Length: 335
Image (spheres, rainbow, N blue to C red):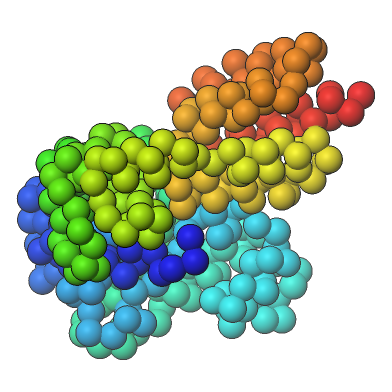
């Protein structure tokens, strides 16, 4: 979709968040800044809620620092050094270990004085992938800069955080939105965009999204762009054919060619931007594989999938487990 995404152009303010408990808890963190763990399923609006908090709390946008954990743990040292957000901290330090690079970026980001007001906010998104050694470093930084920096940890698996980090944070549970809440978010967006819609259309989009607010907003936008209105008929015609077949084909092509880094990048996009969780992505990947493979190649992929499924439930990094699955399967496919 070439047009600006409605998830960005219609990002909610703090008062617009659909869940009253989330609004209340975040509102208290404006005047009394506190470290937070914002936890909930993919697509529930966690990151949007945190940005709404920062917009209310800070007059200057530079007082919000967003660090996606994947920016560190799924990239090479060269890629981290060349990121314009981090290179100022790492110039002349090419021999640093990756762990030390990550710690330095975090410490330097926390040490800067707020541009406006009394504190700044550092967000660690997709925090279920944070290793324990990094969490120990994070705990020390949180202790040292607690007067001037509010840390917000965004995760769908709070159990992966070590106790010393959790004990320093106030939990903010964000549940999957109800169908009524999704419809309540969509209607003002469609009004602002001047798109005609009816109640049945909103209800159909909400059902299609199945508790994923991001998926609902992008589904409504796709329908509006394609047909000019959001009704039951246009939503059904548009979204019944929407899927990620090309992305899954790309993942399988890349893995088969031994280009695991490319496969990992596409997996990351589906996890981070499209609201997938690891188990759902694995199921759809297997569906795509069944359409193009058979025999021992497909059977081996299913065996490996069975082994990694438990890791996706209990582990901390879906991207890592899925990438390992693809790399292992591809090696056998080439044999």
